[in-house]
Structures are given as C-alpha cells and as structure tokens.
Image (cartoon, rainbow, N blue to C red; front, side, top):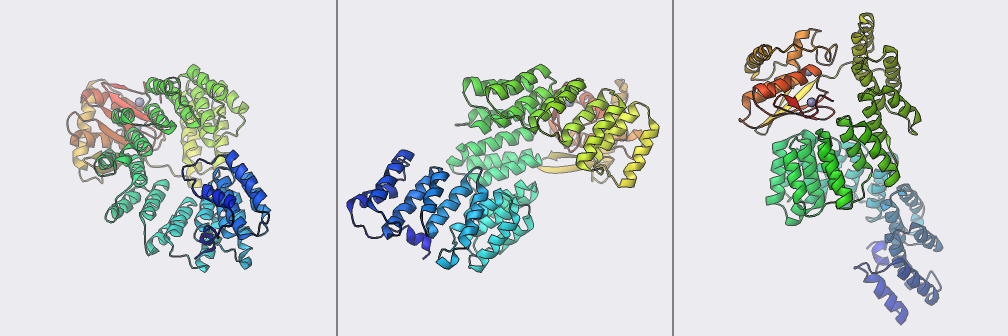
Length: 607
Ligand code: ZN
Ligand code: ZN
C-alpha cells in the first residue's frame, strides 16, 4: 500500500470534536464546504490539536489542505503545506495536483515535484497519484525535458505498466509534438483502457493527422464503445478532412449508438456544429445548433465563426446579437474573432470598428493579434491601406507575417505603389525567412501589374537560386464517401479522359457566353504550368468541379476543398458554371467558403 493511501485512512479517534471534523471533511461529496467553513474548521483544528506531528493532525491537515486546494486557494494551501516540517506524500500529491490544475501556475507543479524528489530518503516517494499530475503540468507547459526525466523516474520506480500513467505519458508526448513516442507507449501498453484509445485518437486529431485518427478509432471500435470524448475527436477529424459524409455517419452514430447523455452533450453538439460548418453544410449546422438542449459560449462561437467563414455576415451578426442581448451570454475573445472576421469577409469597415470598440470597452476583452489582423485586413482590402498601416504602427503587439502578407496582398489588388509592396514583402521575409513562396508570388504579381517584367524575371531567378518552391494547388471532392484529389493539370485520375472531354465541353459553353479568361490573378501564381496561360483552365478546382458535375447526383450541391486561394479566373468561371448547369457549387479555399449559385457567389466577389 502506498503512503498516499495510508494517509487517507483516519487513525483511531480520541475526542468528539475531531470525530465530527473528520466526519465533515470526509463527507463533503456534495461540496457544501465553503472557504469560510474551511477556515472555521482549520481554526478549530488548530485549537484542539496543537502538534502537527500528531498522527491525527496529519490526517486532518491533509484533508484541510485538500479542501483549500480544491477551492483553488493556492496561497493558503501552500502556506499550510509549508507549516509542516514533514508533509506526507498525500500532501505533496494534493499540492502538485492543485498547481497542475491551476490556470497560470502549472510550472509550480513541476518545481514541487522536483522538491518532492529530494525527499525520497525521508520516505516521501512519488507514486501513481503523483505522476499523472506532474505529467499533465509538463504537457501544458511544453516541458519536454522535465517530462522525460519524470518518465525515467517512473520507469525506475516500476510504474511502466500503470495504465493511468501510460495515458498521461501518451498525452504528454503528443502535446510536446513527439507523436512517435506517444504511439510507442500506446503500442507497448499491456492493458489499454478506453481512455488510452481516446487519448491516442485525440493526439492524432490535434496533430492534424485526421486520417490516422480515424484509423485508430476504427481499431478502438472493435474493443470499446466510444464515449463523448471519442466522438468529439472523431467529429473534429471529419471537420479537418472536410469529409461531410463521414461526419454525417459520426452524427448518426452519436444519435443511434451512443448513450443519450453523449447525444445531448454540449461539447459533442458544438463539435457537430463546427463540423457541418467546415464541411460546407450550414443548413444542418443550424439545425443541430437550434436543437441543442444546452449551449455554452463555445457553441455560440462555433455558429458565429461558421457563418462568418461562409461570408454570411448578417447571419453571423444576428447570432451574436441573439447570444449577447437575448440569451445574455458573455462573449469572449474567440466570439469577437468570429464577429470581426464576419465584417472582414464582407468589407464592413465601420461595423468592424464598432465591434472592436465594443469588445475592448464593453466587454473588456484584450485585443489579440487575431483581432488586429482582422481589422488591418479589413482596412487593407477596402482599399484603405494608409489606415491599415497606421493601425499596424499603433498596435501594442508586434505584427506577424500574416498581417504583412495581407497588406502586400492588398497592395497587389489595388495597384498600390511597388515600393510600398516591396516594404511589406521585406517585413514578411524578415519574420519568415526568404524561403517561403507566398510573398514572392504576391510581389511578382505586383511587379507584373506595373509591367516591370525585369523585376519579375529577377524574382523568378532569385526563387530558383534560393530553392523556393511553390505549394502545388490541390482540390478535394468527396463523392459517395470517397475523396478524390486533383492537382493542377493532373492526368492521374482513372476518369481523366472523361474529365478532360467534359472540360472542353464546358469551355465551348463558356465561350458562347462571351467569357474571356482573366489572367490577372494567375500570373506566375501557384498553378500556372510551364508558364503557359492555357493552363488556367486546368487549375485543380476546375478538374474537381468537372468530376463533380459528371458524378454527383442531380440537385446535390458540389463541394470542393482547395488548399490555396481561388484565383479570379476560376472564381469567374465557377460562377458561370453554377448558372449553366443550374447547380450549387460550394468551394472552401484557404481563406473562406464561396457558395456559387445562379451565376453569383456568396462572397459578392470580395475575397
Ligand atoms: Zn484558378
Ligand atoms: Zn466567392
């Protein structure tokens, strides 16, 4: 038996006072003890038992320390802890756990663990209670080095087959980016619990390895029924993949196979709302949201961000109004990212400024880089570059490469001076180094639009000298649950011949409507193959859309996911296709969603 367990067993009682105190402290499962009760009990204990080394005192003080910790009064708990010459393992564990759970003092848990290690000769030994807490603190503070030492120590003490500790190790390694190590521990576990599987699935989702997460989930299903945690991870993986039919399957699984508490769970439902938004199905997202038995701030954030991402600013702002004015939720930092980006996607500068003001003054939310980024982008894309620059120079946080890139992008779109654009590109290179392609592409567009072909050539040479590679454009489309991937000019798909034949047919129809290709957005850009302009028509989303038109059921919208921004020519063509073939086409690009219908796009050509 460990010391921690021993300390939790009361020694024989000698007087009635202590008897009732212990009874009270042991039976607080309903949480009736408040801080003022606790202080009274503490005072009473000090009066009745004066020596801290008395075995009964040790038990009572351990319980009092436990309650101070669970009431999150870490100062008081720490003072009480230090009051003891020799705190027992239970006390060490209690305090380590309290710090590991605290919001801002997780490092302290690691320091306490180190101090505990120095007490090993005094028979204070870390045990199966200690390790999960300290590993949690290591994970949350990304303390890889310390965590590895904890790992070595627990191996020395023979805890390598403790399931709970292994789960903590998996979580710790995965959080610190060592997924291989996490997997190794998982595979070597003699006994995996449901939690072990959940942690492993979740680790893959957090690392963005959605496919693998779903594979591990498939293995898990053979042994365990998934719970709410599992389903949250699985639904998030579907969202990450943009896999609507898989996401719908997960939704059906939650409704039919899971416990009814899982189906009503606020976190699971919030994940569903987020998934449907990210998979391009706003209607179902809305249905799930409206049917939720309970909602929290995150649920509101999901629906606001979802509508915002789809360029439906009015609906996003209506939800915000309902959230704060009718249902009286207090918005947080993420809510305002949703609200500001909704304004941004529609170029609503005045509204954006109004909400920024509301955020800081009415709700005391400290603006973060994302909020400033939205505002800078909002000014820049509305052509108010000088105001954007003023904001950048006034903001108290150092702008990141994203902000500079959005300014450079705006310079390109609005034919701003080349010198200004060069300055922006310089800032991007300073932050990201000069091997990232994005800023080169934008800069070359700017040179091209000013007909400075000499610079375009020099830039191209510089890129090849430095080994800068452009990210290939790639579009995904899911038909009957199977994902099909297309690159620009791709001929590897088994149905390639049909696709290209159909593209010719589309071209003829476009021509008869008087369409002329728009090369402005494609010069030297990502998908131009061998510099040939004719390849605009072979951009990855065009292949995916053509394949979708050939294979989707009539009346069903075509959903395409693209890793880069849609170019202006593809945007124009997709609008026309939506009207020629009377089909709704939903494209998720790097920045947002576009809903093409009847020859128009939901972004109103502002993207
Ligand atoms: Zn294109
Ligand atoms: Zn659009």
